[in-house]
Length: 244
Image 1 (cartoon, rainbow, N blue to C red):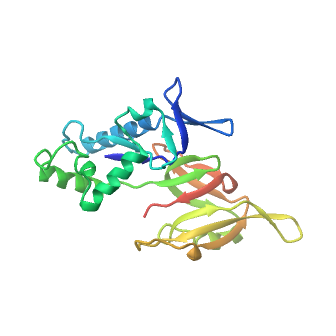
Image 2 (cartoon, rainbow, N blue to C red):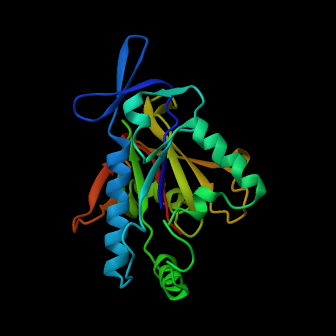
Image 3 (cartoon, one colour):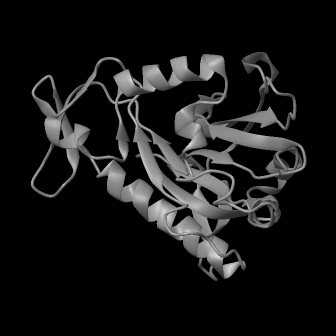
């Protein structure tokens, strides 16, 4: 099952194109159809699993959109969609887990253990445990690019600092806005980076480290399904998440 969490609040309606929208302070905020998106991801996942040799029962991979915010008031049309789980339903599901595994989770595969043979479960585990993970580059303006972070390109004097931000040591770095340094108006960019940490609680905010480099620094990133490496100016990037 593919689950998408949408923390939208307020009254949510559906427009003529099937997208969702809310109106806050007389401003319309459009949300691209979450059900369509999660269904697309589920279909891609099923296709990938089948390409890797898994023989899947019909309907085993499906998508759900969870609306956990109690202040979310979806329209009747949205509530009718079986893929959508409202905040009330979500609370019921959470209460159900207190006595053990939720019946919703148990039924996620539309069947019991006899429907899913141990051999298939082992095959799925093998496939998913060896699936590739991608880096994520987030541009300013909420646009994400999946692919592989290649390297930094910058001034020679900045490279020793940039070498600290490498995959084996860092899980994520965030680009701060440019600031002026010194009396000559030289603009530099701050990079906050999070040391890779495999503890369950993750990295605390106090463990983030910072370096400062010239604004002309570039990130070289190869997008998914592309043979070309793209160059992004550091000032256009919000953050980069690195796979292990």
